[in-house]
Image 1 (tube, rainbow, N blue to C red):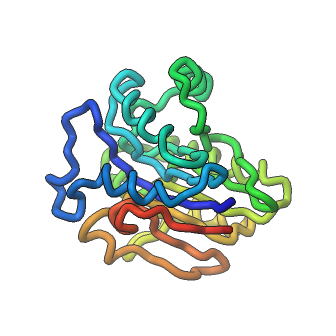
Image 2: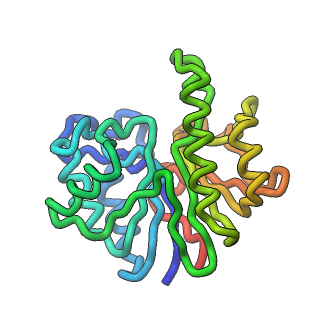
Length: 228
């Protein structure tokens, strides 16, 4: 059994959103994902760090989730800024159940356990949100969701998963960083950054937390192994 992470699959099996328009690095990315996941075992767990499907609703994302469900292992999903299909936990669980999607669960206002570790996370906050007119209410909501997840760890060592990077060359989200430090998070994995912005990612230990970028194109569409 092993734990993996990857973000930003940006699947669009029934919507017209081909990712190769963003550069050759995205060419044939669905096949590459399928090939990479084929090396995983059925007992493995992969955290999908947001921006999973371009579908704007459940109907538009159904084939994307069927594709994910067919991949080996269990998956935990959290919300990204382009996950327009996202809904309440109850409605998402019903959607999965109604469509016999059995390998996907949600990381949202909760945590999941993997061995001795607690897996915590939320979408997070990024400077793009500040520029798009969101106010402090949205920031505080995300910080609150993160803290709810961290509290649910019940004293276990914590691995955190975010969609937005909490730190970036030239940018910090102090409210998010403070919570990660306060709850003694050991490692934090994030996505969202693509193409040229990869070079502005911050990886390594900052404060007491180790940060790693897991955007799919950054990982060459191969899930990053975190734990055996």
